[in-house]
Structure formats: structure tokens, C-alpha cells
Length: 104
Image (cartoon, rainbow, N blue to C red; front, side):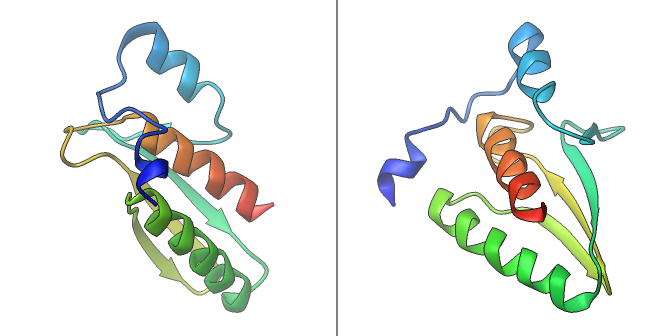
């Protein structure tokens, strides 16, 4: 598990690097008033939403990087930011990309 932590930087993403990395994500948006990204996922039903959350939880533990999220029936609202860095880092982009893949 320690190896996963060293794969990504916990430095804030800024400038062209930030735009390039965020540009690789589908339907994520920057949160107004804070340095974070967010997306709402919709599933066929609660069971599918919960399976998604379970899969993401395992990856979040592996990365030691945990989302802010909320589940209501078939919808999962996610906000990602690296709290100790004060904003968006490579960890957030990596977890967002994993979530996109897990949801498809």
C-alpha cells in the first residue's frame, strides 16, 4: 500500500499542468468557492450505486485518499480535494479517473 502513495504528488495542481490533467476527466467540474472538483454519478438503482461506492472505497483505501461523498438512492455526489494540500492534486485526478472507469 505504501507504493500507491508514492505514485502521485500531493502538491497543488496549478497552471497548465492543472488544466491538462483536469482536461482528461469527463464531466467533472471545479467547485465554486474552494479548490476542489465534483461530479454526480447516476446509476440504475441503489444497489448499483452502493456497489460503485464499495469499489471506490477499496481504491480510496489503497491510495489513502478519501472522497467527500453523499448517496441518495441511485445518485452519488462526489467532491475531491486533498485536504492536507489545501486543494486539487494528482491524487484527486487519479481517484476521479478511477471513479469514471468504475461507473462505466
